[in-house]
Length: 502
Image (cartoon, rainbow, N blue to C red):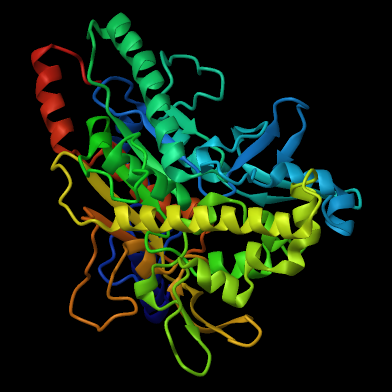
């Protein structure tokens, strides 16, 4: 071998060894200056042990879906109301029966919680199925998030108990997302009570821990974050009938340890108003739901953007529009206040023969929804430091242009989005944080009535947040390795009780 050939060979061996780093082909291993970015995390020995642990030292988790996030069924006919579409519907529009079943009942002189129908939520919307021309396509919903939690060691209650596991540790609270959020908070309170008793029985049988103080961690997406925040503040208490605000006593904190909120419109979002005026389209391949049908949903109004954000202004004058004022909807002929929606009111109110009577019932329902929504949003804005043993953690998207401000034509009532800001495509990052500087004079640092323990921004869309590796990595850490004061006390208690934390 010649001198230069030997030097080149030696140099090649040296470079290869430097790049290989202990037999690895990854150039970042052992490197001080590698700028490579990775999509997936590695889970070390500590993380694997945390995921494998089963016992009272780890809180069970409750998953709460968002708007549209549960399948609905008529318990009398047994037929599906929400979650699947046939090719006929996708091509020709929705049947009158489907629209009637999906709409929230209306009735003059009755409170919202007194307006009942035969529809109930029965299953998480893991995928949204559409059958069209013999081809089925799926719109992802919550299946990825469930898998992330399953890999973190949680055992979902809707599947058979795996071999080697003694109890379920992941529960899904599905609810009728058309109905009032405080009403659903009462149902959540009952749900938690049932799951606590189930786990207390298991802990006593397995570990001899009688009447154990079971705490839950909640992961709530989108509107589910509003529901869980209300529950944390007020438990299952309703909003007072006189329009005043309920007493903020943090009733829900008795059972909640960590509240992880994902893409939640804590200050509302503009698309609620746009959809209530123009209709809702789930996907470009599906028809639009008429404004008056979705306008019956009480929850839609409880996600309207706060008036202080100046999300809708009047064209020409720049005047701020109060979306919680019934006069606004009548003036611009929006949603249920649009006389041209009578053909859909006929579907929802088949026994009411006169157009004028149907209109008055619709206006009455709209007035109740708006009044309730204003009271709800004000209750959620009350600032008070939560108990120290509760941690609120936010995941928000900030990489997609998201509707920020719309302009209404005072002559036609038509809305047009004129400004976009950072968000997840549906919810502004500032709304998720509930940063009350939005629409007001800017000041340094965030102003929010929510005392966040941590805020994580992700480069993802509204549903994409729940599917990202960054979400999976961080949510697993906060659930499994980030102790609250309650959990720190619990560790000492279990040590004294000689419970093996393995």
